[in-house]
Length: 253
Image 1 (spheres, helix red, strand yellow):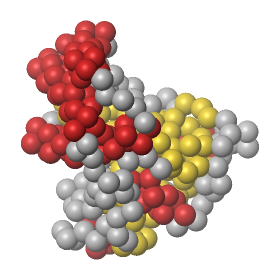
Image 2 (cartoon, rainbow, N blue to C red):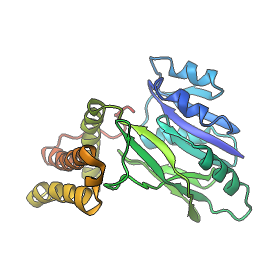
Image 3 (cartoon, rainbow, N blue to C red):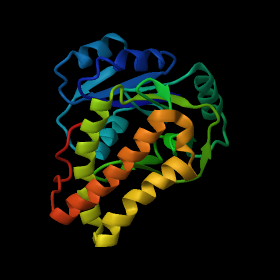
């Protein structure tokens, strides 16, 4: 009934735990971007069907994995995500129903440097990840690709775990890459970066995360995330202003 689609590059620190949490799935497809650390061999040894392909952009790479699946339902995951036993049982229940909608949003427990971040917009962080194979595809975007499902959608109760950003250095490195991709997305939308965008959006981002969404309850990590998201907001608009834009589809995982 269920296939899982995952894209990878150099994910040996994550892929084993990810695949072990999916041992109950009928079919697991991994599209690997020619990893140099043995990710592909490790995934194959754990039962996944592995395909190695050059990078085509986030949405295209994930759609390629979906196209290779073989079951009526597809669960899309990243290598740093895990399916808990409670979520496994809930997924099994909903895909066995005749009247299920075409897709489901799944909440995520996001961990930052080992701490579950409960506020600041980081939880429940619903993502559309479970869908009928015939109904779902990723929309082409430079960053933060979006799943689009033709038909009804519902919400699952139990969260997946997302063990992202194991260190501050890892987080800042990815912020650097994503801000350049996001500046290209702004350009593609025809947005205009005026002075008030550069001066007002970053502090609003901080106030929204830290105060309105109670990021202060997550302690020093909540403060760090609010500050860094404000900086990211400034950086992507300033890069658009300076035309420091990454060509779409050129960025790796």
